[in-house]
Image (cartoon, rainbow, N blue to C red):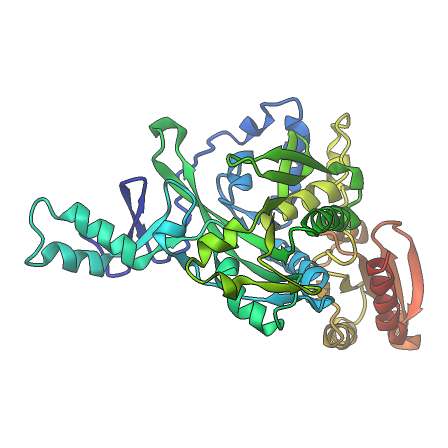
Length: 461
């Protein structure tokens, strides 16, 4: 094995693959030579226009974007995509953790024991120097490399594909923290990894997908487990629908897993069909008994006057898919229109709580230095009060207003504040609404209060 010290090996299904620089890898092996191959479906044109908008405005980044690569997590996020995801994470956290006294936050390890991994082909990371030392050691004979590799895997563990193991592992200590009282939940948001098989070479891994999962593991008595399942399914569906322009695009579906347990999925209707965004899986008390064998008494919690080993409800949402769903939902395109003018005028109508930037601060023609100082002062005040600002005033070249509004509409920016010479004279500026395109004259000192009220009202809808 020749290479730099920052190389490592990843093993999947008995096959080793060399990686470089980082544990969190994306092997660039999915090739899309013809971008119009995205059009190979009844909804192709619709899908392609969505992708054009999302990459053009720096929500999604990647050279080989396809439907499959996006769903598998084989892509990066640009600056606006990162802000959108941050807002989605915040809203999930507020809904599940911040406003609930019976939910605790945890943060667990990326590596889990091999025997705890549900997949038959887990992902393993091996340090190249450690593996090299094994191969060069005195004990490494011709028949030893495979046993050495297996032993290394057992010692190092495997990369997690979900967050359930970590929550089950912390159940006992968190139960004590809750004074043994049921029900309660453990919440976590974290990176997980999934192999993406190459269809051309069977089960061999061609790349590794990354996904950010938002997980709630809920512990309740067997008597109330069904009621809590109905509650969380209803709550989660309503939460996803709350931020959507078309709430009916989110729906639920039930099926049984390979062990006969009931699984509910919250799905989003993409242009090509429905895809799961979040799942709810019901498990009985055997889940905890298998996780903590040998001492059943430590698993008992109090449900009223009874002492019981709880059932488990596992809620797991894929935030990358959720982001894709809201991108698709926000961009309302007409499939029948083929005019390029319509394409330029599309608007990303994100919910105010999710939109990456609440306001763009910009200026029209006039004394540039004085206008820019006003813009900078207003932007600083807004940021200090938690309102995200796009600094349009930093643009050095003049852009016509219509093109400016088109750009900000495609970025999903809620309001555009236009500073002019009038602002220097009397403090008045124009505030344009993304959704109505109407402009309102407002004093610069009232902009912050107006935006705060608008955003708060939208969150409470």
